[in-house]
Amino acid sequence: MFQRTVDKIVEFEGLGLHTGTRSSVKILPAGAGEGITFVRTDIPGAPRIKAAHKNLVSTSFATTIGKDGVTVGTVEHILAALYGLGVDNAVIELDGQEIPIMDGSAMPIVDLIEAAGLRKLDATRKYLVIEKPIRVIDHDRFVYFMPASKNEQEDGLSVDYTIDFAQPYLENQSFSFSFTRKAFKKELASARTFGYLKDVEMLKKNGLAHGASLDNAVVIGDEDILNEEGLRFHDEFVRHKVLDLLGDLALLGVPVVGKLQAFRAGHGLNQKLVGKVLETPSSWKRLELVEDDFPKIFPAYRKDLLLG
Ligand SMILES: [Zn+2]
Image 1 (cartoon, rainbow, N blue to C red):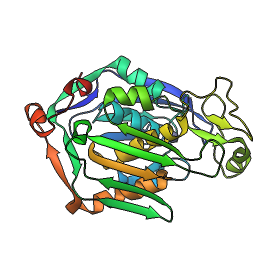
Image 2 (spheres, rainbow, N blue to C red):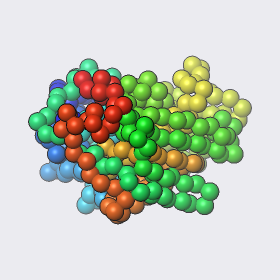
Image 3 (cartoon, rainbow, N blue to C red):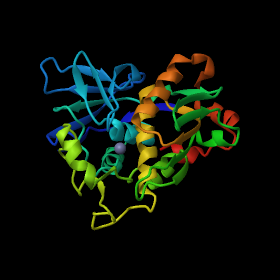
């Protein structure tokens, strides 16, 4: 299985969800083994920040990474788009401090990357394969990584996610997802971020959600969804949580093979899990595959769904 990058430069611009300021993004091709790197072109010297857990700065209402005091906010949806499409290496130039929220989902970025096309690089991809359970628990919330069973390895990564918050629309909603590029695009990429109207004032006072609107978030009022067009899926909320989770897992730096179970999790717990995975190398192995090995190791693997 070969590493990939974008074939042409992908460009977009828009408002940051939390800062409310406009910025432009360019996704450029990068070489094998380079991973995903953000570059703040608006700062002298254009500092570079690798998309890696060691650069995690904050998980409050979004995932923010940074280095030497320079940060990039709300990285989770662009990272989910790259992870979901199998882009291992890219440079993301940004002339502001937050990735634009676009329509609140990963779909606009997915469409642009697909239009630019992907380039196969002359190096194999390394997977992180979970071999022993890894658990992160915070009171009644948890995220577990379990080894994938033989049959589940066909998809590399599977996720069972449940949200259950004492709020209208967010009570007991579950979603199971077996990762393939096709399923990612169809079932996850267009699920939007969400919030409660009653929280907006509080968030704004705390310097958050300054760019939030009905154009980039599902807004839940006292009784109803305020967006005229309604929901994209009846369970759009839990689907968006799975999208966020994929973006958070991208800070592992390589695709992961395993079975993930999450209950009432969020960016904070997701990143604790990523940290714990990296701290316990005895619980996983690295797997480097040449393309011909794949059918032997993952017998039911649908090669057609990942390649191309
Ligand atoms: Zn999100």
